[in-house]
Image (cartoon, rainbow, N blue to C red):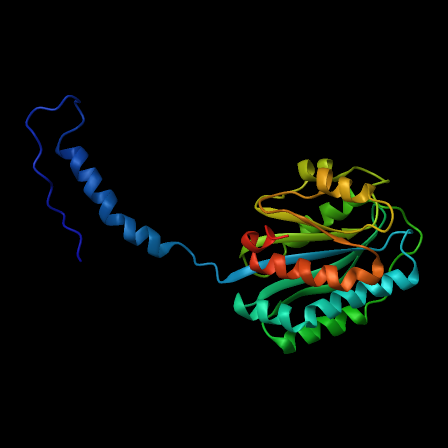
Length: 249
């Protein structure tokens, strides 16, 4: 229906000096112009941009490193995860290994996953990624800073931005997560955690209290590195479907 420009009848006397026909004209102009403003707003076609940050610190031995890499690859190729990716119209994913302050190594550059074929290509890249570091400590704050920079390099704007940081311990080098959140741009970014707990549960409390951030943020716990693939699959499903699914336990 076309927008009517006829001004409504106004009383001759008004308690406010500006509430006359000029005020009515402004109101009509604003209402008539609203659809055009809404139409001009850019549409966001991407559902999710996801940064995967994998622990490569000295506490992770060669076998555990392989379990992480293959666990991520297995999770991305899982039929349920692929079904979730297809259901939301595709997602953007990138992955890196982290350990010491300046030790971050890109494993998977930004790739758009939309179906089984694209997920399999990303998984193959992950499986072929070489380990970058073996003897550096856990600089979690630096890893989060690097993840924030990676997120800002996503190929297109997405409705949700999620950083998925995995580890088996607390920060023990350089600034911590809270300093990273002050120093880097985490606007509209949710940070989730995947904790490899083992017998020590201190990392669970640390990730819950100091690492996760943003709306719907959560931690997923792997009982050991052998449990990594299962935990990563569940975590991906929660992240792909969003906060409503993430609230489930």
